[in-house]
Amino acid sequence: MSDESASWTERRVVTVIAEAVLYERLLHDLRAWGVGGLTVVPAEGDPFGSRVGDVEGGFLRIECVVGTQVADRVLRGLSERYLSRFKVVAYDHAVRVVRGAKYP
Amino acid sequence: MDALELVRLNLLSPMILAFALGIVATLIRSDLRLPDALYSALSIYLLLAIGLKGGVALRATPIAEIAGPALVTLLAGALIPLTTYPIARRLGGWSVADSAALAAHYGSVSVVTFVAAQAFLDRAGVPYEGFIATLLALLEVPAILVALLIARRAQTTQEEATPWTETLREVLTGKSIVLIVGGLAMGAAAGAAGVERVEPFFVDPFEGALTLFLLEMGLVTARRFGEVRSAGPFLLAYGTIAPLVHGTIGVAAGLASGLSPGGATLFATLLASASYIAATAAVRLALPEASPGRYLTASLAITFPFNLVIGIPTYARLAQAWGGGGG
Image (cartoon, rainbow over all chains, first blue to last red; front, side, top):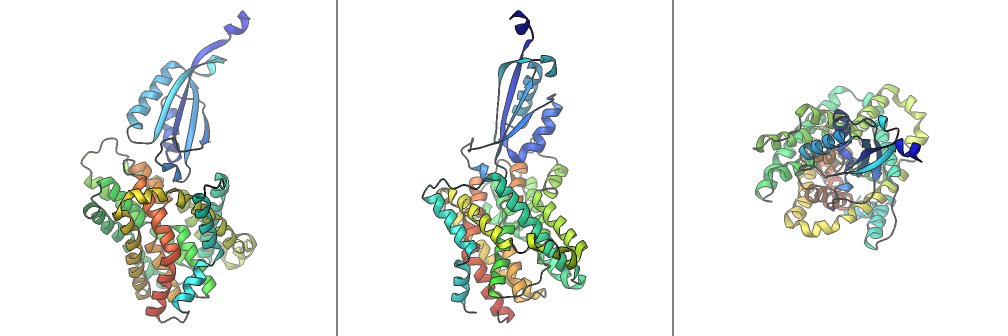
């Protein structure tokens, strides 16, 4: 048991829900802010209640597992560059991961 | 062919009926939905097919024949946003961003409206110049750029403005431009003999694919009907009057630049239609403060069905009357 718990590390999962048209731009910025791997899935529904989802591509949900510093940088960067202008929602929460060194 | 026959031919085509079915399905709250992947696949298919067909015609067209219509197209691409913007600002009382967004949408072009007009002429047996798909590609981009430039000049605050080169790259590398221009190049390079080999896939099932696509368009259009009611009279007036004005000018300009009545009908449809794919994506990126409740509702829920049902047969009738074609 103690061996197993020793292999767990605390990391943050940052979730970004955004219009699909922003994908290329977001990807570029997330990489610049230090995000390594990420998962992207098309999102159903209209998370912003404004029907911008009718724009081709709809919405995306982007998730990445990162360390606290990168999570802070991502949320700060999103807040400065995206949140006031675009339809973007971003939040993070704590997770436990194995092989924590993969997520700096 | 008289006006009533044109209207009947248009309204009772499977494509328009599928569009109506989509509207009805949304209004009765049916669970009918086309998978997103099918929608994407159909739009890729339609865009590439238009390009291929246009490319074959382009190869067989002398430059002198296309130069006049191409010049008029570029002129229209600049003039429509330049007139739309002040109308929305003064008559609509809209913000800089909303007015520029509307200008970008009405100056650019709806590929599906163009294709529906082509199918309409095919059914009516009216011949047209095949190279007009080239004009479609020419008209798609300039208006978006002109409208974004207007907004840039008019906006006093430039905080977080997107670099101009990035916007240009995003507009030019958009799916619709890549597929139409790419298709035109492929069609022109391969020629009629080459394209003949893919005809069973890209030409014969084309109207069937378009019918399925219009079913989806009906579903999407009807979902915005609520916003038409809340958007106010200016949106409704602009969405119906602008296509008629642009279409009428398009018929005259098309005939004057040497197009046949069928070609002038297609040219009028290009000018009368409003984009809801390329322009919308560009506007979301470059003018995110503009409200899609206005520009997208106008182009998608008002002008698109208006052109489909009333506009196209009207431009065809005008072109017949002024161009002297028998049809």
